[in-house]
Amino acid sequence: MQTEADYYALFEAYQRGELAAGARASLEARLGAEPRLHQLYTEYVELMGTLAAYGERRRTRHTIAGLHEAMLAAEAEPVVETASPLTHSVNPMLRISRTERRLREFWSGHRATMGVAASVAVLAVFSTLLGLEAYRTAHTPQNGVRELRREVAQIVRSQKALIRQVNTKVLGTTESVAPVRDSKYSGTGFALTADGYLVTSAHVIKGADSLLVESRDHHRYHAERVYADTKHDLAILRIKDRNFKPFSKLPYTFKSGQADLGERVYTLGYPREDVVYGEGALSARSGYDGDTAFYQVSIPLNPGNSGGPLLDGQGNLIGVVSSRQDDVLGAAFATKSSYLVRLVDSLKNKQSAQPYRMPRANQLAGAARSQQVKRLQEFVFVVKVYE
Amino acid sequence: MNMDSTTALAADAQLIKAIHGGDERALSQLYRLHWPMVSHFVLQNSGSEDDARDVYQEGVMVFYEKVREGSLELSCQIKTYLYAVCRRLWLKRLTTKSRLHGVRLLDEEEYGPYLNTGAEDDVQEAEERDRRFATMSEALTHLGEPCRSLLEGFYLLDKSMLDLTAEHGYTNADTAKTQKYKCLTRLKKLFFASYKEA
Image 1 (cartoon, each protein chain N blue to C red):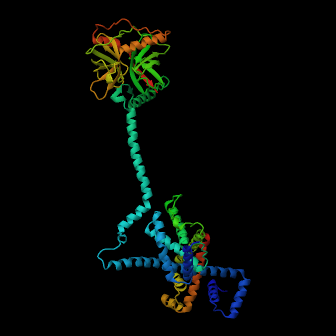
Image 2 (cartoon, chains in turn cyan, yellow):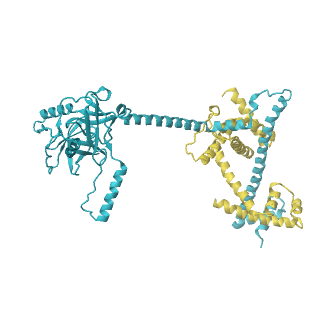
Image 3 (cartoon, chains in turn yellow, red):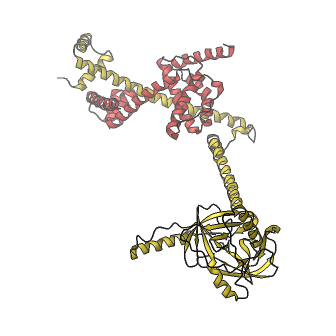
């Protein structure tokens, strides 16, 4: 029994033609007759062929690598030879330093990427700058005048939500406390007539979905917009609740003429949760940029004061608080009451079905300021705006 | 066909004949002649000097092996053929390297119709051969000593059996021979095992 190795020896001798004629003939005969031996032989041929080609490939690779070295050497040589009679290189192109060649390779390899990156960067910078600028101009109130409606802070809302949660959990008043959506903005408003008409600023109810009016004793009423005059920043609302009981008689009257310069004036408003009193003087009879529909008053006002009533010492309503100028100290603006009176008159003509019974008698004249405020605060409301 | 390309084709034919005959100087001449073209191409397409050298040597290898086999069917100038082969090789490397699917290459118009050169098939064939050689190299490594140096010495480096006997410390040439055949059968098993499965 011959081993595989023996057969390999036989095959090699056969391929090299070292076998005697008789042995060769017998092997050829066996190859023809025995499939297993034939397969062994085929595998042997393939293996030897691959091995030989592999050797050839290794030599070739070596030769070609040698060619490259030779070429580089041949390239380098003439430079040295031609340079020898001269102190400096004749051809500056051949004198590229290693670093510079690296840089050149890098540049030629990545210039497209770098170009794109640079343009993206430039684009991003400019679009950010321009975008911010556009955003700022869009959101800055026109020319330094700030409308005084209050954006209800997120923190207050979340605090309220927390309190509500505690209430429901601890006190178990689950049914009685309906989840109340909190308003986005708030301002101040005051009664126009005893039967439920209110006045506020037009910008307070800008973009309003629904309006809620809350009195000092926490009565809440739903209100609807009757008319808004954005030019003079006035708005008229009406309480639409069925169970609304008319107010008691209004203690103040609406001045249809102009108030005088230097008059002591005061206002009530809701820049925060509680009603806040503010006092000052009428400092000019025109508003921002010479707008004669407004007074300038020197009362410190805050967002939330908008729509509040402006009264003189005798308890005449002379204006509706509207805005303040940010870049001037103590300059706030209020719409003149004469415009309000004119607006109500025109509405009377248009909608004769709805009577506006404006108060005629002033009950505040002569009373002390604190007494006036006490009477007045029943008629000043928080206007909550939902979007 | 103009004069220029006619003479170029004639020169090419001469060169191929010389290389087929095993003339190393002819191969060296060819190598030097087309290196700038390929190096420029690779550098243009985000490769380095080393990449260019690798690709070019691979490309020349494809060409050389085809010539030696006598199976080269050239329908264009050697220049165009080499350009096509190297372009193909570099494109392959780029796609595997960068995982970018839509790699776009900057081509030189000068080497124009590189598409119908048969280079595509030749590169494919060379890849198949590369795989076979890689398997062989791996099998040789797995074979271990002294089998490996025995076989390499005899079949690849053409050393005589006597030298090998002395080198490996066998008592006589016959023992070495027997050992060699045993090694060969082991190589066969290793080679076919991984070649068939791949």
